[in-house]
Length: 163
Image (tube, rainbow, N blue to C red):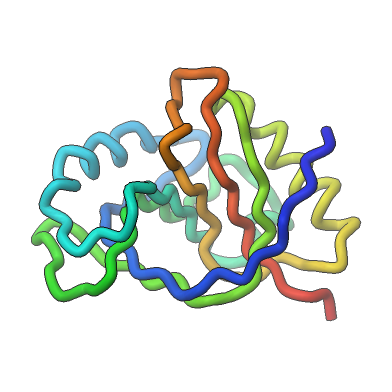
């Protein structure tokens, strides 16, 4: 698999949406997104039309001692210009600026583990970067459709120069 990332410096992003604790074994992503999409019209000051699927891991050991039963926080969000108006049942997240390796993924969700294995098993160990402890996320733009094999999304992995 040849999927070389672009290295990009993310500028700070403000996001509003919903979150849930889950694991890969007890994956409630579809329920989280349904809850978010039902209420997204209440989010004001949106920036663009992209959605953000964000994963926040408690610490880096999630990847070092990978176990599909380990829980993490997943968020379904949209970018906003400010936090002036926050719908009652939503929460905010600020992703601070930093370096990211950005991979393009095309395909159905069930094919995603192949890319993840490549990123964490091949690309990252052989790169001049290491994982940084910041949110991981996918940008779901106009070419994203989870039921289409031609669906596309950007996969943003937080990195920093190896010490």
